[in-house]
Length: 373
Image 1 (tube, rainbow, N blue to C red):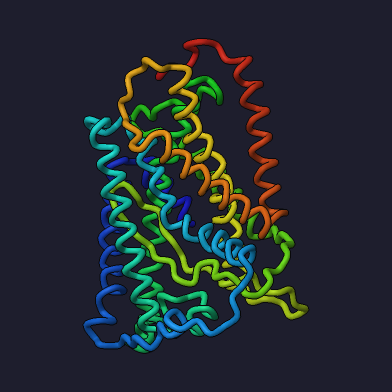
Image 2 (image 1 turned 120 degrees about the vertical axis):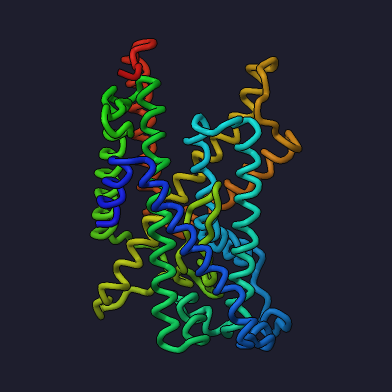
């Protein structure tokens, strides 16, 4: 319902969509500010909650187990940062993009990092490590400690606003990708048409809404079988935070420490839906790691094939910084492949089908065929 409703809003008016985004951002930032500051103001923090971090008495895990746990945890951490890509599709609508796109990315990611770390500090000082490792609703638990049952309801409202804003931001930026692909003649031309009255990419918005609903239904009914993690279990996202900025409107929902073991007892519907959400976001990250890696690799290719081309966007620290990013992406992808092989391979098959389509469409493409009607 949210996907359809937001799609209609953005179809009828880009200004309406922007207004919804502004309202959701204000609500989200207010919620996150309260999450970070209130535990300190109300004196509900306890440094003793950090004791497991300050005194490590347990047996040290093997290096393989340690790095596997780090990789799995980082996959979950990538989700709250993933919204940085949403600035790219709207770059052509930004004034002085060569200046403002890097500036927006820097400021946006800086805000996300500060909010993410601030929320995690609040989590760890308010709740015990055992509580954090067993909970899948950490933000709600913090507010419940602060305000009782009412706090849990406040947290639920904050998470809803965060999810609402994140969904709307993708409804704004996603159709611009459809437009760009249609402009290159790789998908049907009708996806590039602008509505004559609303002046919005109506066809692209409808196409994205249909695809989104299809994926939601698919992951709601699909239950991939994955191997259970071995102790010590890695916290897949014991403490994730939702963050908002002009450059980053992706959200993060608290995620389970480990996948629940199979049981003959049926899971509650809420648990099943959360598992479906986790599987969907993991698939998004899996595909994103591949495409981000290819994008970063293109920096090296273009430097070699177009050495005299104008470098509108500078790559600081080249060639070291892109290489470090590629290593990080590769490590996260391998961790995801080990932890969830069936789901990861399914994503790879979907991407492979897109590669086949791309080469086929490239042969059929007519130069200059796609223009705005």
